[in-house]
Length: 192
Length: 192
DNA sequence: AGGTGAGGCTAATAAGATTAGCTTTTGGCT
DNA sequence: AGCCAAAAGCTAATCTTATTAGCCTCACCT
Image (cartoon, rainbow over all chains, first blue to last red; front, side, top):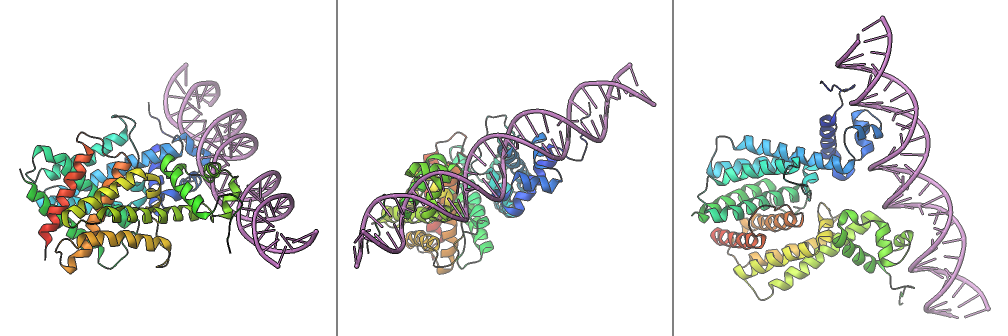
């Protein structure tokens, strides 16, 4: 039952190479032609592994969300409260800055249903942040709002920085630490 | 000296039509062909008004930032403190939700220099939010950080919502109001 | 009348994505 | 040892878009 392909090429390898290429040249610069060259086949051969560009982007997005969940999840291990929040936020931003292309693939991508790998991956990332919030005593009714706020903050900051949208004076790392402190203090004030 | 073109078509009209079309079909769906059809000319004629797709996107982005600055600026008139913050945030989000295509054009777009209309427009929006922060007694050294935080929050929330990234339970409008209250309380705690 | 230039148009070129259909390799089976 | 079915490649062809070249015409100015 082993499905060993002729070369070392399979769907996972193609998607991983696509994600890497997107990080290097930007999501818009990821073409079927450049990806084919990267993995050493002619363009049409890629269609043996992925359904096309849309399918490729979708799989890259799912990969990105899973990797982000892994990164943030690992970073949070052993921490709680403010430390967990800081670790999660830093890990998330670092991931986006190191993998801007694959993260960009996730933007505006909607899962087709609850079993879509994209939905599963999104849920994993979501759950990690939910766990971080557990370190704060937040009323049940506020958790969803706090989660969305946190997600907006992290996503907004990381994507703005990745797009070079912060151009003026102050140090960006410092701003991010300030943002973490701001969120932490605010979340502690929301208690109960 | 009147430069009356044969038809009612000029650069501003083309850019405005492009922005409107992008809002309707998404930035990715904005093609030179569909825009030409929309304005009633053949595709190559568009090149008499804009330099090409990149140039068009750039001009749409500048238009979007100027309109956002107008909308937020108007909304803020006559308010200060928490009221100004809420008005600005609501107006910004409303603008992004009503004009997702043109706003998307601004993402990742870098001005070529300080005289680029894009830079000017970005500065206008920036200045409006700066004015909002003046209603809080924030130390000089914290203003830039607070501004970036606020921008991340608004941009993050609005783009996530525009991309349908908030799928689970709670009411989105309610989350946004919660977020405004959160930011307000946090900013008041930063005083001095 | 005549000329000029902006604004259109058609036709041609080039890049990309995708499909069709043929070929080769390879693992499994006799 | 040798066959064969399917996976994985390849070439060639098609389609969509963007862009450029070069021509045409009308509005306006003299």
